[in-house]
Length: 444
Ligand code: HEC
Ligand code: HEC
Ligand code: HEC
Ligand code: HEC
Ligand code: HEC
Image 1 (spheres, rainbow, N blue to C red):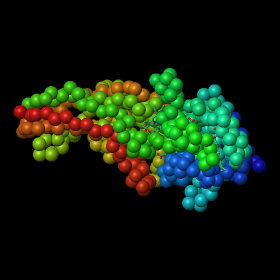
Image 2: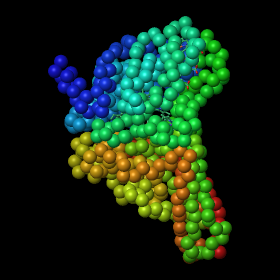
Image 3: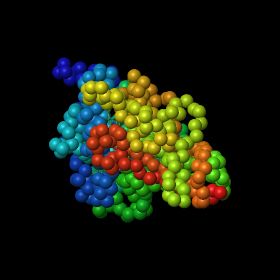
Image 4: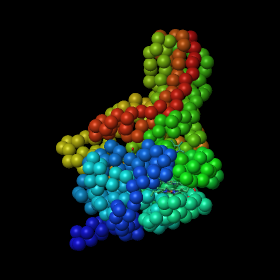
């Protein structure tokens, strides 16, 4: 009892709002049905959900590693972050949190924690306890009543109720915005969307991440013209990322002389995402632009981006000598740990669109719960924004003939240095090509 109280107090102190803690242990796993039961009738939706990160939000390899190797041990060492022991689970495996199964068993033990963000989580949500939701501030009432977007849904299995909340971006905000125990906004996709152009147009998260198509949502259900698909495509989908940013090279001359500097610009336009790219787990996401000059023989020369001179710019230009993420060594008690390469394998001089986070000791970190500040620099591409990058490259004196300027825009979930350190599958950190373009000029 005393221990329980201590845990609860730690939780209350570490989390910004006390109201959340009350829900931990409010329920039992048995109060919620397994997703495959829902899938008996909602076949298509079940299949789609199964393929998304929502169904893997607990079991996914990097999630397991970050929780069990970093966040959980850290929560047991440092009072200030004690709350994340339960906090991570509240968003990544809500049933485990609601059932008081903290910490849950690791994924390989195949408990119900593995269900992740399941049908029952979202469709038993009734609203939020916050005015502007964040940090798993959803209210939930398990039972036979399923809340959804229809006023006329009739099911033989369960009761249904129309829920305005399910049509709103605020529902997504309950898990997609997060404040660290130090008060930093470490996830802010909803807040970013809210101040951008899409909120004004009334285009919500669901419009892009749950596309509508004609069909039935359930065997025995009504034929409808706009069934909500549960694809939740984000940055883990190469098709969602492909072309998410338009890329152009402009301003280069058609002809140039060897030995001269050739000047040009790269223009990047975010015309598809309702929030900056990257968004979400920005502590570890990178979007970067590599520019190369390639001569007639195929020899490649890197073309570094020109500096603009803003505060914190050094974090946005790849530098293979820069080290970061030292907190990993501290948490894992690795002696003489110097950190990992800040930018992984991104080639020197490439512009990186990112939002660096800093721990209480001022070091760049991927531990979002251990983030004291992330306001130094936020260099991402906002919705409907065009960013221009300048380049100036001196053509070698002996170069003649056709010269190609190539620009490749890549995205990665996790810096490769971090992925390799934790021996994650390569697919978790491999660069994904977002766009590419090239122009030719003739060197006299
Ligand atoms: C025996 C079949 C069956 C099972 C099992 C079933 N449903 Fe349904 N469900 C339906 C039918 C039929 C509809 C109505 C569809 C329509 O009208 O378009 C429906 C509608 C819904 C709706 C829409 C409600 C609204 O008002 O918009 C939700 C949400 C839902 N079900 C969730 C679930 C969940 C979660 C489970 C598992 C716990 C589940 N269903 C299990 C048949 C089923
Ligand atoms: C992350 C939250 C989330 C999860 C997980 C989720 N849903 Fe939904 N679901 C929604 C939202 C939001 C809508 C309404 C979307 C809209 O209308 O724009 C919806 C709509 C539905 C509908 C009504 C579709 C229609 O257009 O008539 C059904 C049925 C449904 N969900 C069943 C399920 C089932 C079954 C699962 C699990 C396999 C599931 N949902 C998982 C959030 C979720
Ligand atoms: C109960 C918490 C919860 C709610 C509610 C929720 N999400 Fe999520 N969502 C998550 C978690 C956790 C992940 C991350 C899974 C992982 O990688 O571990 C995620 C992942 C995603 C992704 C995938 C991102 C990628 O990198 O590929 C998208 C897109 C997404 N959510 C959109 C939505 C939308 C749209 C809504 C509202 C309709 C919503 N979510 C509501 C918890 C939630
Ligand atoms: C106009 C369409 C649009 C709207 C509106 C929109 N998104 Fe996205 N979202 C995208 C696209 C395109 C991507 C892929 C590019 C990327 O990863 O940033 C994406 C990516 C994401 C990701 C993955 C981000 C990353 O870099 O890991 C998450 C999470 C997400 N969206 C959640 C949301 C939430 C929550 C909302 C509402 C508050 C929302 N989105 C509104 C189009 C949209
Ligand atoms: C307020 C809800 C919330 C809390 C609390 C939370 N997360 Fe997440 N987490 C998310 C969402 C939503 C995403 C998806 C964002 C995106 O796609 O960029 C995510 C993404 C992640 C990812 C990236 C997955 C990937 O595929 O790249 C990891 C790892 C992760 N979380 C671990 C944790 C750990 C460990 C904690 C506790 C210290 C935690 N999360 C706390 C909601 C939360």
